[in-house]
Length: 161
Image 1 (cartoon, rainbow, N blue to C red):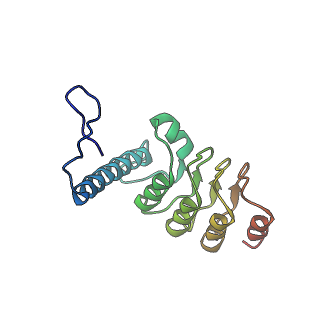
Image 2 (cartoon, one colour):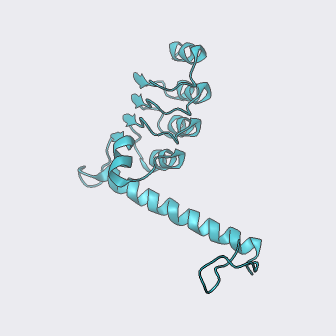
């Protein structure tokens, strides 16, 4: 890490910050981002719902478009963690940064989910689908169109649900 010199270019002098200080700054930045994401998602989930309630059908694809936010595993994890009653339907289509970690979060926190649309989430594998099949026994509608890492084993997993 190089500090900025008076002329605006990177200075060749080493920063005086210790690794512990750098780690503390990164941790604080991460916590601030997490709080911002949680507040934004909480507001989104309450939009148009009577006081004290939350949406039961969530479209993260649309949320990403409207907010300009990139939907990631962290977004899905926060969403699943903040909704006390769970989710009936979740749409995460075309969110290319979503992986099996998001599937695990859904399986862990939203085991009563009934509809999951993850079309064109290209990083979803058989492992993510397996975590859903083990925990989400109420799933009736699944869409993994364009998830090219899923294979015949994934279909066998689904058949066993």
